[in-house]
Image 1: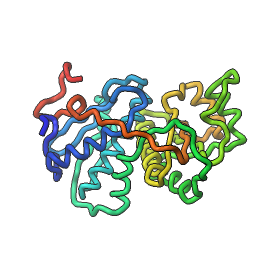
Image 2: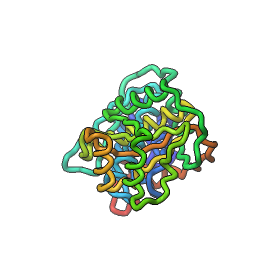
Image 3: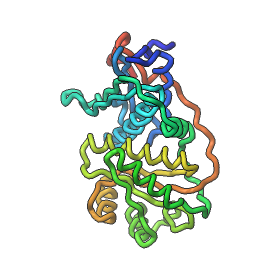
Image 4: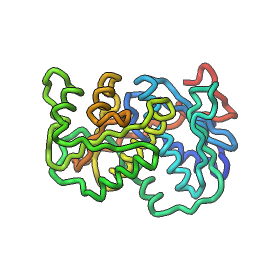
Length: 278
């Protein structure tokens, strides 16, 4: 077992390795892994790593990793006690997760952990098969469970969306009206670091819900500049701050990306953080 992976709470070192592999599975918005994990005897700490795509993108990515960590801890039969942004003087400490108590593993828990493995981005064209209304309700509920909201973007709003995302009349093929595809925005009531961290969890739960339902997904969170987000907020009625723009539907299979490993992003209190730690 690697030096950074130690037993935590009720979890053995092997279980900790399993939950950390799940946590680091989400493909980040940029080609870096903006998270760092510190294992202590009682908790797993999530720290911010290199912010290649800016602070908001980093918080969304780390929120996705945190949601996977929570689900994976629960799938081990433990309750994940989570504190977000627990220390005002340590802004890079994003969350502390303590595996406490026993919690029965449900079929829904197992389905979501399996969806972690299945979930990956897909920018290929989608088929004409519709996203059933029942699944659309599940997607909306998934966002709400993480204190966020999901808004559907209708065909009548597409010209404005295209002008926001591709001003100047460029071809808007990614968002063009097509049978079977569903365009949604996931947003938060506020636009604070806490809200963005929660939104990252909400986006990941929506994506896992889609994957569990057999849907493909593509998202453009990394291209939502401040100006585009303000314009998209107005398009959606001004009630929420958009954090992610998603296209959902039925697409061709996408190859699984290899997992890079944990060595560069996990340490323990036996080998604490240092200036030289990547």
